[in-house]
Length: 288
Image 1 (spheres, one colour):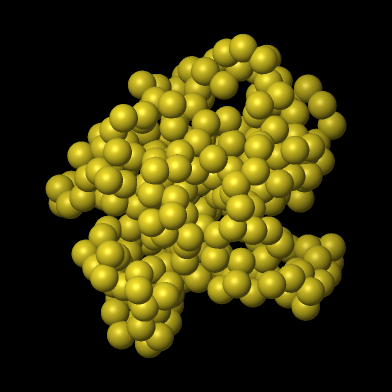
Image 2: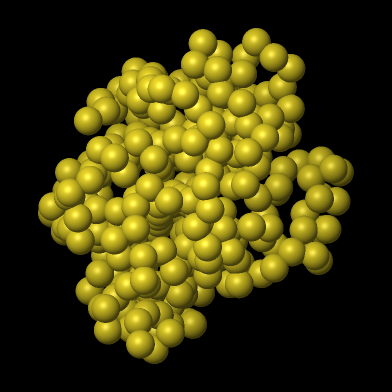
């Protein structure tokens, strides 16, 4: 990675969900490569712990902004805080995600998995978009999952309230929305010097299933024993963030370092654009 150190020097990167797993690995790698990283995390203690760990490993410390991504009001506050210092944003990595074992609603009344995995990504990105465009050339990387291929989106029941809740159904639905968002945002930003791509990191030995209960505990134990480390899993997102090979690539979906067609190509007509306008209505962040 030494050949990539110089291009990243002074490049400002914003990463959500950076206090553990895939996000922490990305923040560590980018900081070591000279990037000026700003982490977005919900818990101050975890943010401070991550800053300390990255400083110990790299000799440089990222900054952080506190934000509860399940709250649209808090996302708006965090976006204002990020924009207040007038600094550029060269790379935005929308990494944060969760898996809710049972149906739960956020303070805004949205289904929790859909809200954190997709609506927060939509809202934060749209709020930061003008600064990202000003900072071009710039890149947006949205973390999705190959589970989007089994997901189903109904614009009349976008959060799946009219069907039996399953954690995989909710998760795959949110990740399918992420892929649609990536494709539509790439179209919107065409010609601005900002690229937008989605990535599936593959299986990761992280704490995404960290929830109370026996089943999540067993799942996490199996995950940590059998899945690749976050440092290995983050290679594709890191490639999208820094590699000159993908400098002009936009609207793509990547898995294991290769671009592959996402499920959205199977959706007819203006489905993606209708989803964007619905997302704008749900979040208060206007599309366009």
